[in-house]
Length: 305
Image (cartoon, rainbow, N blue to C red):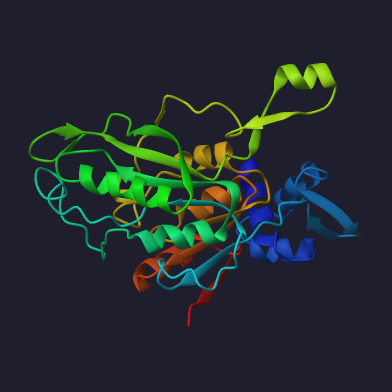
């Protein structure tokens, strides 16, 4: 039954208020009594009463904006306006992606240039985190992975940490070596901001004190199964659970996350689930359509000029 309350919340979270009649009409496949009960059970939690038979969602006014455009062109975003960038760019590595049970990507791929990181640094707030989901290192891509770190450093980013994403029991056969990992590479724009609670200092001074770094110590690895192939809406779709965990380490509630190569839109889903705002940019028209289908009432759509 908790699922129905969440659905009602998602449906009306961007409206000023809604009536019981609105909820009955939107969820006409459910008995009116059940809908009313779910709202009553969550008063003060998900919903607030405005007047007789009229309610509004409690908090959770985060939004996700989807923009159809080139994710390498961030010129429309203001300087120092984004709290976090999380992205899995469509990296070009055809040799590694050809062989075994893998194949060439069916979307446009590219390799980063220094100007890409200059733009990331321009829009990201000082001390905030850039998270790049990258392939595991191999003989074909190790030079490119080094270039990415070099570009980041030249643009003012500091290397913070790398955490391996272990894809559960899934194993990909590249024709030479079986593998099931990718890397979550984390940089900060300058010195990392203070997010981690300093327990000893807080106890001593009787008020919250924070240390530089992520909100808590990063794990040794993220051990999360990949999205089953029959459930994917994009070839390189990340698991929502992985994105949610990353988001909790590098952002706070109500902050703004950017994914400039949205693909399946899962970063946006995870952001809303964790009460963050999100900007998604996706170039491929079919992917944009699929992302729109994935979201219902909690997404705005714009087309870049």
